[in-house]
Length: 333
Ligand code: AMP
Ligand code: TRP
Image 1 (cartoon, rainbow, N blue to C red):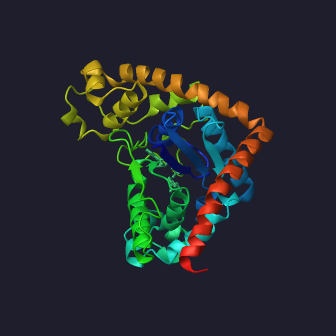
Image 2: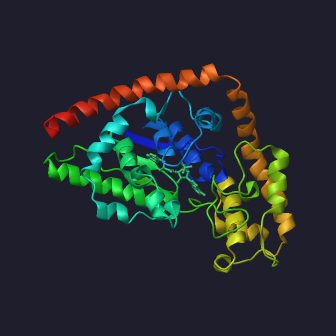
């Protein structure tokens, strides 16, 4: 049986090394395995749960498609499309919002973090965001969903929604209950300025993240300025637990060299950070610079990018429309 892979990325700009190591790099590996059918979605409806400038949104949508392709996702092999162009997503999100329970959504930590203190002013979309995400996944009978650690709770909610729908309407296995694909290690890359905070698109300081559009000099400079402590690099994994910045940088190095924490520690134990940072810069530049150059090249060819999502849209729409028809029948519409 082929695995059906689905994942989404919000077109909210500043795609960074966390997005790459936590998600996009895995998309590429899954795309390369012929056993998989992959769908990668630019989730623009999710992006508007917070205010967006329409011009910037358009340009961020292009940048996200370009990043998928520049990173190695082959649009001939995998479906790449825009969520807003397949109306089934919004429609099925409504139906699933009548299945999901308030109590389930009230537990979502991402809403609490994003809404902050003034929950009254958060959009309803921000609150029901995980229901739309469930619609994305369930419409395509997805079996596996590659994401970073921060999306684990949303995927559990998606599983609960699928099971409740199947039970409520007595349609065993109608919605496939998807498995999360979250890497055990390196699925949560932290800020370069604070090892306890997630690397994030929305963090004010650009020095907190390595953007996938950064050039060689920017990468080297950001790694040079990355926060560290004053001790030499440790020789035991346990010592990293109290040193979040060291743990994060060694994690990034290990992930990019397809190695383990232990092997990286063995290599750098007792050395000082400046020596380690030189090696780290080399591996980050080797991986990210070609992607950054390719993104810039692809962004010059909007016709090509539009063609990718137009083709993707046709394929995605066909699959989703079939599922919608079946859902209508089940519901009694
Ligand atoms: P988003 O930018 O929120 O649409 O996230 C796109 C993908 O990147 C999701 O699978 C996230 O889980 C993943 N992701 C975002 N930030 C990080 C991070 N700091 N570390 C690892 N994965 C991340
Ligand atoms: N919520 C995800 C994020 O912020 C993006 C997303 C939307 C997604 N729909 C999805 C991820 C479906 C996986 C599957 O990262």
